[in-house]
View 1: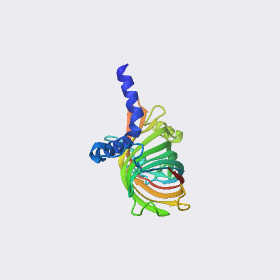
View 2 (view 1 turned 180 degrees about the horizontal axis):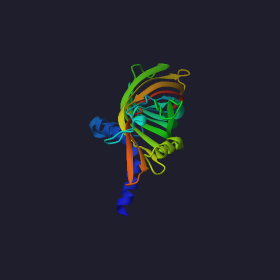
View 3 (view 1 turned 90 degrees about the vertical axis):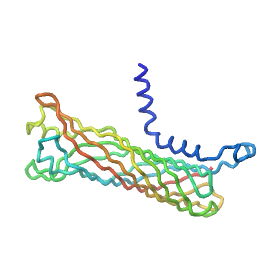
View 4 (view 1 turned 90 degrees about the horizontal axis):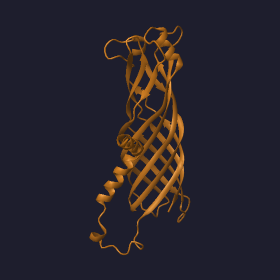
Amino acid sequence: MERHTLSHFHSLLRPWAPALLIIVSAALWWPSPRAMAQPDWREADWGDVILRVGGSYVSPDDESTPFKYAVLQNWDLYNARWEIDSETSWNLSAVWQPLDHWGVELLYIGSTGFDADLQGFRALPGRNAIPLGDFEVTSSNALINWYPLGAECLGRPYVGIGINYTDYHDVSLNGELSDFLIDSGVATGPGRLSLSYSWGVAAQAGLDFHFAHGSPWLANLSLLYFKSDTDARITFPTEPGFDRLYSDFDYDPWIVNLGIGYRF
């Protein structure tokens, strides 16, 4: 029971690990109140906080290796490659700016749904592709931003670098591909598609533009890129038991974020 509780706690904490790592690093780097001899904390300047919400255009890289067995190969699947179209989603971010030219940002890209095909699949007459399946993706990013211009400027460009955690969920194998595995004698029953999670480096460039001097409202435009490589598996029943097909999938998306924010 205790082991199950700890496992559940770890699964809840894992998507927010990048944010916790940045916060802990910032806390260790920030001088202590005694060292700085700060005045009363109620009179101290803790910097600004910006909250943003907006939409995202997500364009995956969709590089992949073919689905293959550990030894012998199904050449119809081996010659096929992933293909995924771009999609839209939503985003939510919070930025803490303790210094004029530096900020810590937590950026969340909401659930984005994708339909994947296997291009180059020629086992079916007159066809060059077969649907692979569909899945949802969510991304949590923790970044440190640098602002070259001061807070008095209407437009404040910035660049940032940090870490990303991407979670793949609601994954399902397309029925047509599952039927092909059965009809070709590879499987004896329906298969299952699975994708893992990933950690990677994230980088962004953006612009906060205030509507007027002294106004807390602003518009935001940013371009985000992060590395996300995951393992894909198709598991299916066979006469001896079970077998698997493996593929390495590189999500690696370019994401354009457009939103509105409020500075506190």
